[in-house]
Length: 130
Image (tube, rainbow, N blue to C red):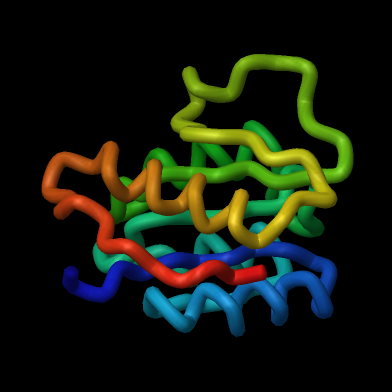
């Protein structure tokens, strides 16, 4: 399967670094710490965005709208210790994960998002990330 590109946006440096390091085993992964940096990192190669719902800088619905207007069409996975009380699917969010969660849960959400993309190949079996 061709390498897919994932951008992980989280202002918690330790958590972001864990996600980036573990996801790099399977994908091309970029880590950013603000919503503004996330928008700067978007290009047509980005397949999935994993974004903290309460990230610093541009955030929440404004950030989702900006991602929709970007030059790419990524799947979005929202993560947060306090998820929004609204349905975000209408804003392009494929899945919401409440922190804390296992890395395998994030990996499964990414695989599901990639499988939903029109040009996606079936995901290959991968080893556990725990």
